[in-house]
Amino acid sequence: MGITANDVVSLSQARAGFSELAEEVRAGAEKIITKNGESYVALIDAQRLDHYHRLERERIHLLLTSEASRGLDDVATGRVKDARGAIQAIKRRRSA
Image (cartoon, rainbow, N blue to C red):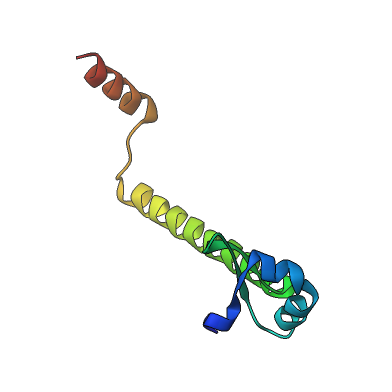
């Protein structure tokens, strides 16, 4: 669902008609509240916000799983370095 001009509301309009805005949002609309002519906050349904948070958590889990898989592939193919040796090499380069 895209945002239209009707979904952009000034803060003063939002204050004056908050109940009506809340009902529109509950019915599926999303509203952008502006302050001094610029985007300020968004008003969305609580269930939709929960859904967005679940999607973000799932995305993070997928990224972590992908990183772990690449790490395991590195270990399996021998593309690893000893942490102590790597830290010592970095310290040597910094002091040179």
